[in-house]
Length: 182
Image (cartoon, rainbow, N blue to C red; front, side, top):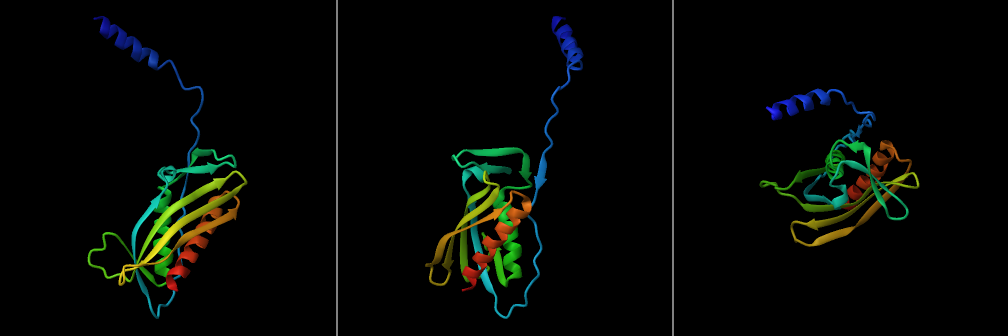
């Protein structure tokens, strides 16, 4: 009997309290874009084995990197997906428009010329008001099974808007496409 009275009292009192502080509005952002396809005389078949990222980017929240090394995740500015998935979507669209035909592991019998591995090192808003995207890439031949090229591509852009992220990402993708095309 007392349990019923306590339950009824709890239900009654739960309606008497309301949240005094409104929850902050969450804004979602995407980096999607379209690319004009080129006429291809010769195309490259590229397998993408994986796109990895540092653990801090395994979260859709935007990252602010301070000059003292502190990293803050935004609770109100959030990507619609993980940065590595946004990167992959743009990479696939850009490369296919550039006559680099891509396939993603597992390849299922597709014969690729090259294999690309990518790790996202930075996908940050900087305290200075800029954005920075940095990736490590490794390009291998699937004929000789040797690493042809590897390195880091990094791009900073002024402003900390989604447009600045798009500009930085496009520069990184264009540099990757150039390295693959050589």
